[in-house]
Length: 243
Image 1 (spheres, rainbow, N blue to C red):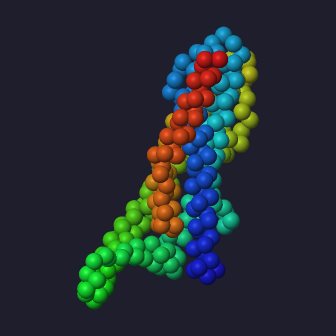
Image 2: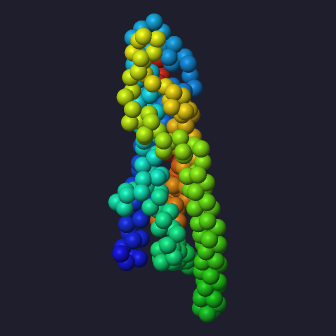
Image 3: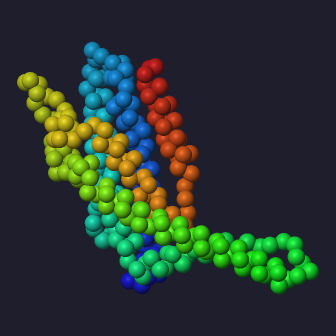
């Protein structure tokens, strides 16, 4: 595959990863109150609704772990995953291509000095040179930081638990018998933690969006996106609690 086609492919891949991340963060926003606020469960005390809320919590939890394992660590050649993105970022030919795009000058035009066009050209050239130098410095700093963040997360106990979840909990029958009655499995039954869903989403954020910046030379208003997810979840649970 030519460098140009690889760049086009990776630009598509990282956009897919970003979109998938946002969907997963929406799920996390819905899950968080079920992890943090016992009052939500108490709303259904003494009713069959308690079991329904427990099932929703487990379903969201498992979906988030499954999503993040795919987003981060799937290795299939056609998979939109950070494994493939990081592999590309470690390829010198690929890096040269995206660095050239990343470090293009902004194209500032200088006004004034109409009586001295040579001076105007000189100033514009100096600005362009400074722009390129700043972009190169940022690129060469951000690249190793992002790769290191990925491998640090991949080698963590958190990532190990998330990756094991598919073989343990996610692929397991969700219903067990406890004290003679049917019950849902709990993540702790498999050595997992309820907060693993929240932690893996938050720990992967910089890796994903740094990579998007490096490859597409574009960024997102993350605060606006993520606050929107929280507001939607807050609205949902407020209606449920007042029903």
